[in-house]
Image (cartoon, helix red, strand yellow):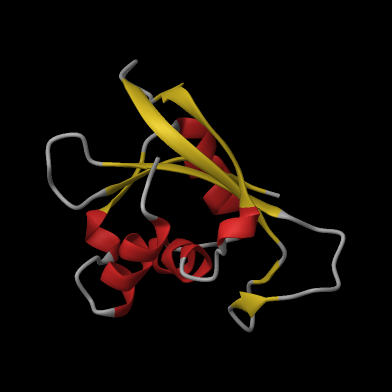
Length: 113
């Protein structure tokens, strides 16, 4: 549903900053804390996604009960070197949407191992 390449381009060009990210569930916030990731780390992982990492789309609710159309991805990712890796049994799972009000905003509903 989401144009991944356009979203990644916005991150690369500085058009999308950590302030433009909303972690929309308590679980996603806990997951980020457990990973010790900042919003910048989340964007670093997002820019490493490829089309083949796509796992599907679904509707998800945020902590306020609002529904969002989300895309889900799984990536083998080195969070220290901030790059994709080929040899790993560990996948990071990201589920996100974009702002429904027309603004450029990422709504993260899930980020976990």
